[in-house]
Length: 111
Image (cartoon, rainbow, N blue to C red; front, side, top):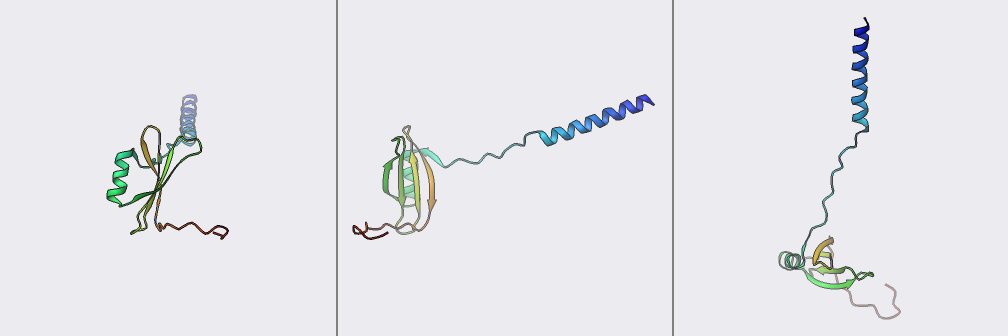
């Protein structure tokens, strides 16, 4: 009778351990793909030739480590914002539609 009890206890402990491991084991997290990046020359070629976008604005970040550029297509309204690092890698930050350029408002007129 003792052997039967010992075997049952072992099975119960194994099942409990397996359940605890299944519950507590960290689940793999699906990695989010990063933004499209590549050498600046390649990214500019894609924006200008494939999407017919032209660079409309550019500036440096406050820490002067990245160049931020705004590309737009007057005909389709498509636009892209990129960032370029000192290494020359350019990444897409955002894309969208409804691109339009506006003249500056006269001084004192609300936006």
